[in-house]
Image (cartoon, rainbow, N blue to C red; front, side, top):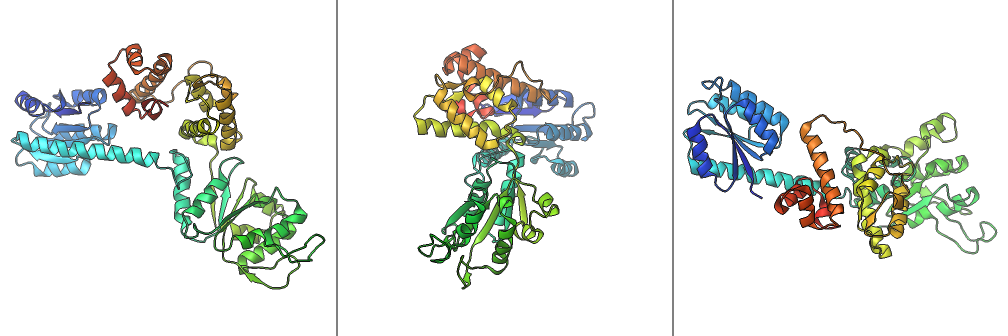
Length: 453
């Protein structure tokens, strides 16, 4: 696809010169601020050359600088090369302060301006590739998501991974607290040592102490041999205590001593055993409220929660819902050797409308069922056990470019499914050429269509 360059200049001679110089590009022109903004919205060029001397005040740079400010506000990633008079260095530097990429002083030399445009275009493409790569990189290896909510949590987890500070993961059931704990371990200096997880809510109260601390032979009936507890087996590594809020109040005192002294005593034992481990705890309960009700020790709460991390529920991660769904779809398709490859538009809308009270765990269950139950290659809302959304939801944005992008992406998806994934038929249904269709797919980063998933 040929790159578009916008030339903003009221001099017809310069327009003609640049048209013949920039034959490798699709060049569009504007001769004042109003038409420049209109062309910017219409063509979305990666590079703009902007003459600062525009009408109605061509002798000064005021109109050109206003145009620059509007361009940067509307399209901050666009590279703007300002063109100034031979002795107008002051306004050239002012333009750079406002966000221009570079400046060029008249008279225009075709080879020089072409070189500047090439450099600007290459930088714009490189920045775009970096943005795509940054989004594609799974945070901390295991954590999938591009939303601001999850990325903020990932950055916090990355910062603490290299330390031994006690971390408390808070969040609703099914939000992925153990996944975060494993990711923190895998990005820590202890990554080559064991990661040991125990759910404090799943083990009976009378067995939890011996499960954690181990026991000596003969400590109680049935203790036929000395057995190491979970804490000892995590030596050198990480111990993950899930649902710490369900730990019995009596056992909390022993846990506090271990965290303070880093020594344990097995049940029935009398010798202190030094332990070098990192501890990560998690709970869906409101520990602060439990402290107030005296059902959880205040001193233990502050010991385990030196740095708390709140993991957001899936309903607060709108833009991650379809990304996660496609990840699980691909995973379960291979696991069950199923045909399902993609989602219908109805299924996508149903997933976006669903509140996901069970969070990621609920999504995994629904996707596993849908992959098995789907009749063909397309997963429908019924396969997911979700109600189809009736009618189109009203868009919240009033920005015409964003509205157009959403409408175009929806139309492409519908046409793609209607054409049974045949790209020629899809283009025909949309009334565009195949190259135009491919460029739109690239523009909207519709990787599932691009790869035929």
